[in-house]
Image (cartoon, rainbow, N blue to C red):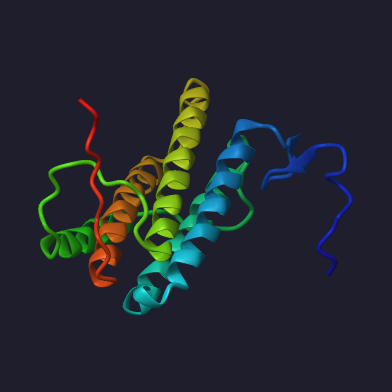
Length: 188
């Protein structure tokens, strides 16, 4: 099977269900950003500091494929086969792991500046891409809700928790790498 189809040469792509839309469509932007986030999570997963978290990060990548598939599905057509879904247990898994990491971290009393170690910086980049994905998914939800085809509530919850998770993970990685966590000290 060839990777190129020649069907997108004029700026159109197909949703799951067959309908063709502009590659500039908000839906395409949303799932494209989720795909970008997935690549950043892969880079975070590949950092040696995350050897013990590789499986959870891989599971997160799997859930991002699930979210991408949902966003890529034409809301006006039911898919021909069963699609995976984000569930409350997926959200809970992130919360549970965040709580465990947070229990081992010093109390946060100021904003943290991204950086300190390349691996930590990769995590902060993933976090910011996750926030962008969240904004796009919310915008998509806002525009499709009127038509009764909004984004699944657990997708919205998951992507929100994931950005929080990535923030806590960045702090935990900094701790494990014995890297100074630089806090923002605003000029007065």
